[in-house]
Length: 162
Image (tube, rainbow, N blue to C red; front, side, top):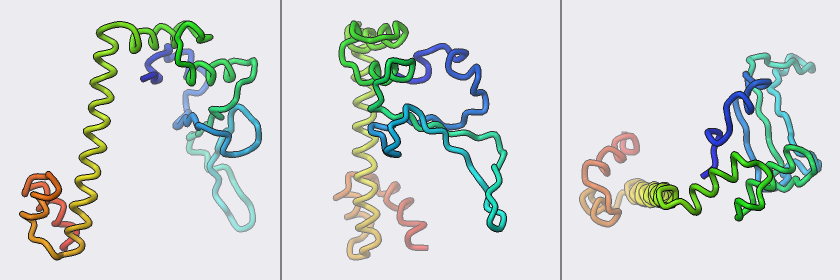
């Protein structure tokens, strides 16, 4: 998994210290063929729009962009499966670690297992909530069918039944 920890913070944030959000999008959802879309927040005052000015900035990055500039090379690297074909050595080094080093592969397996377990838990909770809202089954049966503990189901039921 490549994260902001992959690159030195000074490289990423030196000029964008007020950056609050950065989203790498899989496609060019804005359909403007741009590498980056800065998003600013505005307040409507009558018919005028005034920059909110809270210091927050969001950048949407077009994941399909492949220009011959820094962003294009970075988007190439993010979709690249072979670290040897990457443009940025810092990313390539981290990718090699997670793909080729025994400890890195084990760490990635753990990350993937944790993600899978989180998703399984979310599905169990969603199923239990649907059964609770239906109101046909006692909480003990919902726990049995959902794979959650009775205490977890009771906790989920509290806000629903209140």
